[in-house]
Length: 208
Image (cartoon, rainbow, N blue to C red; front, top):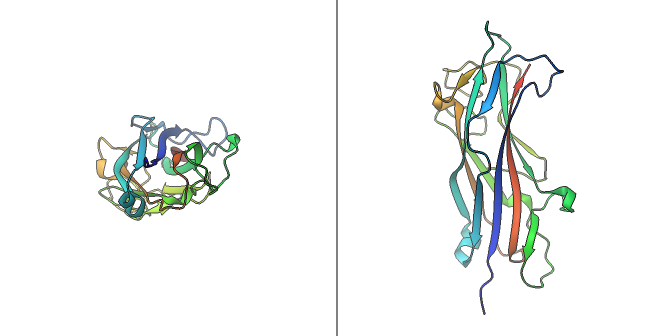
């Protein structure tokens, strides 16, 4: 009998927002930008028992380069945050805790995979993210992982410490403004073979 494969597709989207939590015209940075190629995707293909049991890890499936320009003259309030969130096409009827189902094989009655089987890990050379190097997961569509937090305190570039969020660039402070993202999925044997999809979004925004 021909073996059924399971495909998990993760689509990566990148967004940079000006004044995300401010009224129009209240801008504290000159520009915020994610300098990476949008539309990346990771295709996890599970076609053997060992892959179902041990999982598949993609290292560096997304590389997020941040560039934040200060105003002239410099504004001491220019700081930023970087978020990661997950979407699963809820308008298509997908349950909040499940992957979007694109196709299924066979006649099983099990539910679609849960979102929490996707593990994500953020790293950079200065360990600037509070969750650097530790696998995280999402439970529901819309859940957020804060890569750089909005603490209200500005930490200037060049300090190579946790939560650097002042103006700077991956061009001049690469170890602080570049983030490597790893994805890992370990599905087990609970779900019907098929094709399932999630969208992971990265959002960069200035904060007051």
